[in-house]
Image (cartoon, rainbow, N blue to C red; front, side, top):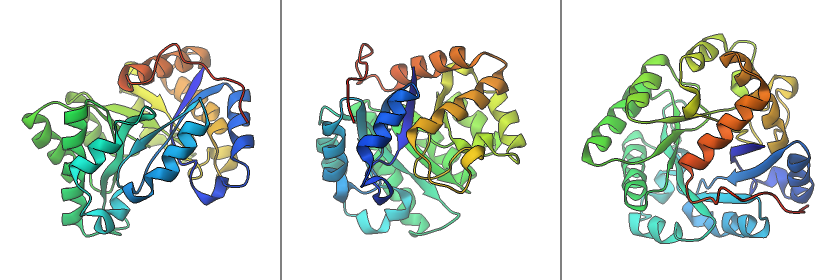
Length: 266
């Protein structure tokens, strides 16, 4: 069993063949998927998809790219939406200093708001971070001192300093197709030093397809290839790594019933 812990099934790339994509995921052994919210104002679309498929769960939150347009979304609003039975996480929220699509001050403010919601609900926070390692580490340390919360560094591709500082705070790390890229040697070296009980796999589909399909549309079934490379990095069989990341998923996303298995869909 594998789980795609982070994908975007609501994106237009999948609109015309969502059933087929989910069916292919099941055929590949990917039994559960988490479709991630990037705009609270579009949460209803996310929720509808999650409720249409037994094997799909979702999150609620604002991506840092969209922080400026949703700076007025309140913590209470996010918290209320998170009560839906299919919502198992907050986010994705965080910092993106590579594109800077929203002012950094607003990114930081919106991110801290999501941390507060994660702390209050007990749901894990899916974090997006790019070219913001020092600010990310500092904010996580400051906020953890105010009260504990669970978090996942999604699509982890940051430096060693953030990886280790986050580890001290209880971080989980989700690895995407980036791990399979030929030039990701440094990332693989960092991931080799992370505890196996903190690792998950994801696609971030439709983005970041593994090396075999690099530059093409990604989809949840491809998470199998990231798991293969992750297993190689840690020197274990693919089946062992799949079981480990699945255990880690259920430990982190504790709102999901552990006994849940896919049904006939798609």
